[in-house]
Length: 296
Length: 282
Image (cartoon, rainbow over all chains, first blue to last red; front, side):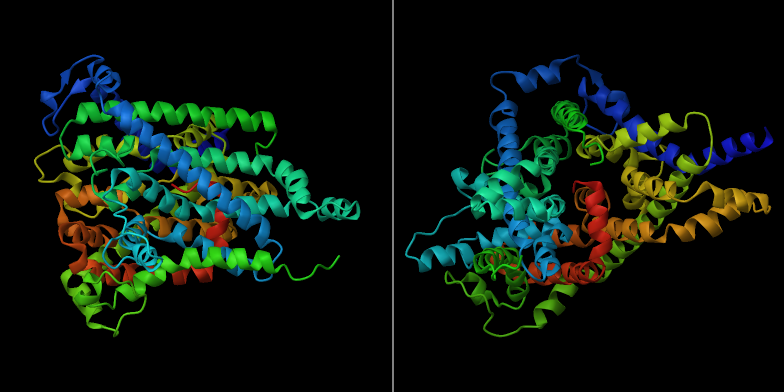
């Protein structure tokens, strides 16, 4: 009996920093920003918070709002675009790299952007795209093609950033997919090869089906990350320009709060995006329960 | 079954590796370039001469001494605090019996589902105004503003809990019978046994914090003495014409990125394990 009380006391003592942290940085902020999302507030003085009901949310979803189109559209474009591109690249790498010598070295190279700050990635790529002295336009010109102002042209700006986001995300996807590829027993391939199966059939009939849990995991977690991502766009374009061409939901939230001082509206954007992300996370959990791969 | 050398696979992987490494090479070489080369329409990878003075100028105009110190202090403090809180939490959640333990663990798991952007607005307000008396700038007057919001990591607690679960209870009970106090058991038996997991968590946390940008940027807007490396370099980039500053920005980035690459290449085993467990990079 005495030991139980002692353990309880010790347990709560050990957990105390965590309790304090989540109270101050999670529970109070969640409540505070939920209240803000139903209010109008310019920051600073708490007594100036004015309750406005659902008006912020109505503004977001009104037909003339920028938030649905192009901002939320861009958000999905960016998330699906980066996930799709980096998945295709990572699958190719993960499948081929297991056949090579010095695997670990090759994989390390794909990993470099993962340990690099977004400020470096964004600036380096913005300069690669630059019309004066950038490598990509230098290459285009050398091939006799005209200069493209990738980040200044509304038609090319978002796709150009999607390429960078995908490039930066390859490493993490390679890691998970390689683990999946390696887990497939070699005997499956040997048996198929004795039957005379081609390289393509090995890939499509053995690797791909057996890799399904890893693939789903990469796609869904990548999608969740992509929907929230905005720092790369901020570093490369500043404010999501030209116009709203590269503006995404989390960046618009940031700008509304910290540039224009519309803290209430910004909070309603945060909650809207949170609900979108939450639904996808819930789907992920559901899919993985059903697939019996809870260990991921 | 021995196959012939897969040349096509080597070629594809090599092209991919060039794509991954080239931007960093371009960054390093741009750091040595002069204004004429940066204005030129023609692209060359190599600078016409290696201007080491660019690095000196970057260090001076970026005030890199301050940036470096801020980044170091913040990254080390956050890493230390995360290791401490995660080990304490992980231990309590596996080896100590107390009411509500499982509910608390599920709650910590659930916190990892909340996206970071949701907390930017309220946490910024709290940080700048805490402790809500007349202190100018609140906690944002000190480096605590950059450290405290990262001092507990749900992932860290999860990682340490998984690892400490593997320590046999019999070992701890034996120590209790020998009369060791609970604190001694924690400090002299549990902590030494968790070193591999602590290494993973430490490297993962340190690199993540070294690269952290958005929160540091917000705090910088209220107190520019708290600029970290990513923030300081980004500020130089956004205020001036890129053809004038690209060499300095690249020099600054080279100084801040290369140490991480070195750490990563030597300790990647631990880092990759952390990433594989987190399953998702922010």
